[in-house]
Length: 160
Image (cartoon, rainbow, N blue to C red; front, side, top):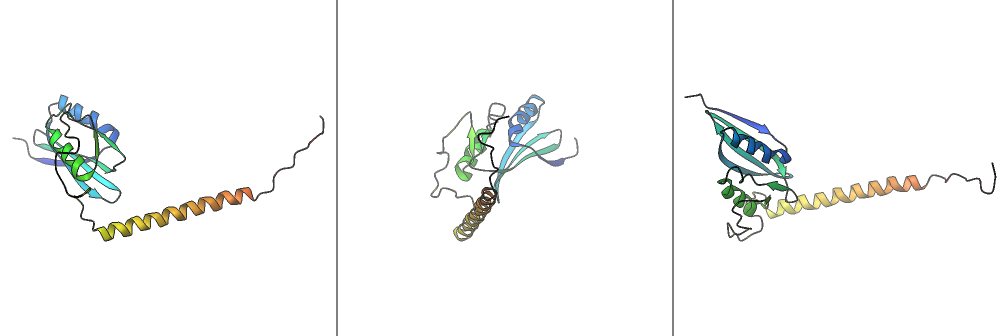
């Protein structure tokens, strides 16, 4: 038997589906999908195994605004993880073969799988609003400086 090895490979969200399909075609076994809440979103780690090698495809900082193409057309068993991640982390999946449409789990809160306390979340949101306001003010001030330049005089009524 081959020696067990493990590797983490960063992958772009847009390439995930095609990479999973390629692995299926080449005899890789789907193991799991893991979701990890991080600043800026949720990391998704899709694990595949072949010949003692475990490769973990890591898509970083997926947000609620992103759409993840389901891999269930290649690996039907992924429907469990994709429904779970949808329900617990609010990640949007497209074309899940068996889609529970948000009813896989019944949870009491909108985002139950977070270790961020409401107080920390409130501080982060407040800081983000302050930073956005500062950026908007800076952009407005920069635009105002452009408007303060004297307009070029046009020669009116003069012929060539």
